Length: 421
Image (cartoon, rainbow, N blue to C red; front, side, top):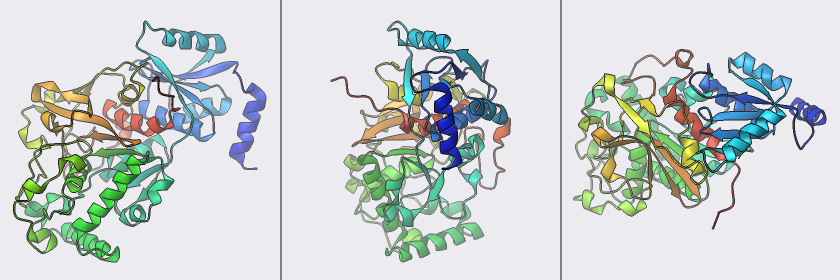
């Protein structure tokens, strides 16, 4: 018998199945919590031990209610997470308050620690990706996969998939103009071509399309996909350009299809419609989806606001927008944000800058699964350019921008409710 199961049995013997003498409340409001990010890690750690957690939506910033045990208290203390031990009666009082139709709150049961995969090239440094940084900081375990694993259907082993600064169009991130002579660019291009050949494809764009189609099928089959920065729009562009060559000779050795813009099929995308592709290889941009070059917002006033949803009737977007503030600092990326009128009508805009007509944080359903797109590269590094030092999350333990990422990590752990109709 392993230690994890032994601890669980001892816990059950002490506290029983039906109730607990006391509970641990991990508050997530701005005033009470010293480390919001590691609080998610403690919650995940508890789920790993096959204990259920109540996520108290809209209650003190989206707090967590855990069964009380010395090992959980100790874990909070070790990780620097603020917590309160409350009585069984106090916990019941909180849950009763939350259940009232008069308040926009809800208690969602988290049942299982989701198995997490991060799609990333071999040798990629963790600080190149905000999600791997925050998962590492929060001490939430994950595994890395790339093209070969995806094409071998290994996505089926995971509950949650993350895509970050990736180019699914086969244009090497559109870095050609500035970095085509840089050693790292030449090396990465050669590695991508070698991998495509190994996987049986003549072009990188063909290999990346095959990967994108596998990811699409994973989501349609019930998976959860979260993407940031250029993985968002380049993924949709690759799907829309299936069977169409949109790459110029410096990327794939031959010319693009004449009039390829007219061959784009928007019905194949997850989130975006009516976008115009950027044809020039010298422009660091994929399409009109991205707002980076169209923004007129000074750094000091660059914020986006989170939408408010009904916790009882719209628990999914409510989970994904839990935070201790409705106003979140903006941050740049190759894909910074999304042109509002190029988002499909069935996709929820959960975070936006209305004055600039841009969406920052969006969510949708595809088949039996879900996807969330989050614009920008690093919530605590405003511009993040090639070669910049990594973000030290010890300096940002209460980051609202990073909390949105971790909301998505816990989302698949929620107990599935029967439809009301």
